[in-house]
Length: 107
Image (cartoon, rainbow, N blue to C red; front, side):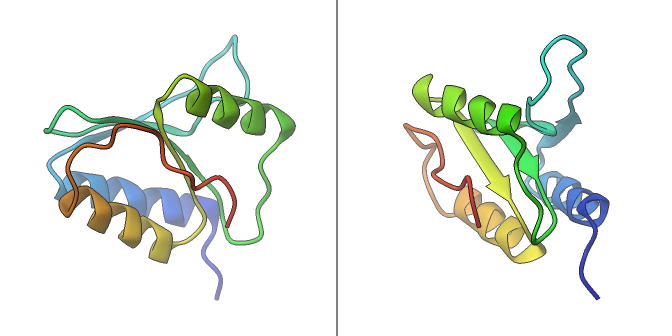
């Protein structure tokens, strides 16, 4: 059975908590297309993370937001499965803070 987006999001929040971080749910009333979660990690990293189910699609506004984050050299990731959440979490444990954003915008 395929995970729903809410299942992946719940799994992601637990993964961030395992890093002693916080994954804030973000809803912007004035800017549609912003990422689902803003993640603050204890090492000072901040991430904008969009979560999608496998086969989901980024809206045009979500694509613009992702491009803006890359242009502004922000940490951005779009994760499409529990496996990608695991890889993102593993990378946070096994790397120094990045100097540029994650290239993960499509599966």
